[in-house]
Image (cartoon, rainbow, N blue to C red; front, side, top):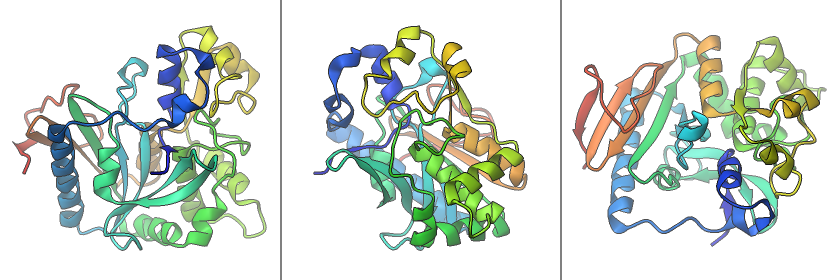
Length: 300
């Protein structure tokens, strides 16, 4: 089994809980085994997400999942991609960037929706969000995502988990998705470097990346020693302020809402066998606690 690293903020969480000298193996170990009950829950949850996509009448959606518990950073979703009904893999597979530890470089990967959800490392509750775009926006994104040449054009050969959102030096998984959206909606000139053109358009559209405040200064310093984390692309002022400006699903969702106000957002979560489906731009309460207007039913 190939070892992969896909979660953009996983490295920061590991920095909080482990020594910086642990080495690259720390970031490429296989995830902890899930119990049969957890696997069953996640598979049923994946089926519920697929059902919502099928019933939507759309052919593409931006999907995000919660990986590790990042509540200490005020972050729920860590990883996003494009779910495509007409994926060359299986229907509704998620086209995404992943980092291949075996050959130490990023790739594009079409992952089945069940596998995408199974990558969640939450223990108690599992979450996923779905963005449904207006027809014009959806068609442009679907065309760009399914055109491998266009999708590869905004893929960087150099990966950094904490990549600065306005530098072409490195890239993380969510930054690839964002730049794909920019290439689809911004229509950059053919003779311009694709990533630079995408980022320039994002800046003209006032894209605001997620700001991750790093509480302890040693975490910024440790990035010089830890594989898959880099500081050289970040402005010195940000490093001094112990801040990283990176692309996370929450920032992508806000940008989509700004660009296409008619977009719709669904959020699903499961705790045990209880499934909650929420419609709106706010999040379900922590612990998968449903609000009065949410749909609640049993998985399976």
